[in-house]
Image (cartoon, rainbow, N blue to C red):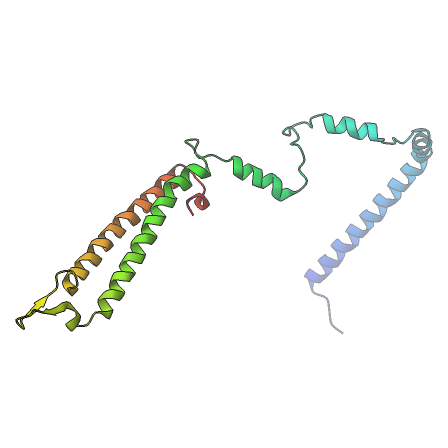
Amino acid sequence: MMRASPFQKSCSLCIFVALSLLVEAYHSSETQSSAGGSKEASKSDSKEKKVYTNSDLDRLRTTQPINQDKAKPENSGKNRGSKSELENYRDIHGHDREYWQQKSHPLRSKLNLLDSKIANLENKKTGQTVSSGLKVSKSGELHTSSEDSRVKLQQKIDDLKLQRSQVSREIEDLEERARKAQALPEWLR
């Protein structure tokens, strides 16, 4: 047979002591409750239970709970309440969604217009052949047309790209001002 180690013996002794204390505590509480239980039972029987009515509920709705904010009026849905809060939101300067959209929409429209002009000129440039920019005079000499030359088209494209970079910089500046004013990001879209 296996012998128990001193550690196992001390653990089993601790468990035995803990169980005996629990049994003793249970018996002592049982004797106290039986002696005083008849008094408590008669008190609980004589004590009436409170029945809450609709008037009690109305009174509770009108009173303000301790350490809580005043009750907000209830809305029919959670989304409706949060939507109205977003609609009423203003940045730190008091501007709303309409203000920021009046600033951003013209810049975005200008950017889209410049993009379309650049795309049209690039298509025109790629579709242009070498001979399309040449004109033949009655005497048989070749002349280049100033309006159709590839160099002029490239110059126009470069100018439009420069304007586009300025407009995009203005949009970035507007977005930065809106961020600093704590405007909502969707206001600029």
